[in-house]
Length: 266
Image 1 (tube, rainbow, N blue to C red):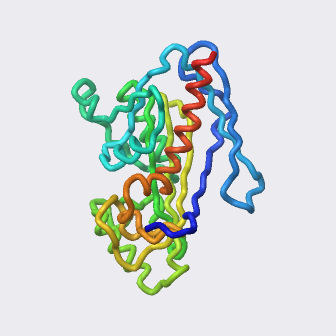
Image 2: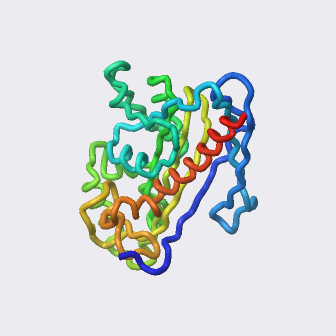
């Protein structure tokens, strides 16, 4: 059961380069979206997302979910609300394109890693590709495991190994000292062009032991702020409503859907 106070959630958007990216040749429209930042201390109280689009020629062009992770496929597909857009996974294309790429996630930030993955999958597939990179940031550990969340306990570690290490690191911490947040960055690329990038965050704490059997990754030990269940204990639709990835996908759906609508009107 979810508590009466809604989990604290945050949206972030990244301001892309001033150069407007055209998805297709020809006339284009530009859409500006003003969204609040997540920090009251920010010098700029609002940030802008700029999308340059022309979807007249191929409004139904498929989108590729740029990941080999079936759990991510499921969560992104369930949360996306793109009327008329067909979603594909690498497995759908391998018979024609050969083995899917295995990008080296050597960026210094989640955004850089998401762009690395999206651009490489787009070049491989010839499709616009949507990739995510996600990290768990623990306050008491100076933001670790952060961008190294998937390999926190070593290059070939399982998430059970990662969870075990994280709980050991927090063994002497209690209550608010176990505060953490999940961050998910989504990047949409067409070849090497970055079309759109958004971030979703979810604040919470790390539990003292795993709870629940669902979800994946660090879900069994992440308790969203204001909730009584870990991500692993939640039904998928409830997790998608408040989770970092769910929020990022909701943002993406809103902005990309608006771009498609503008293209159809033009």
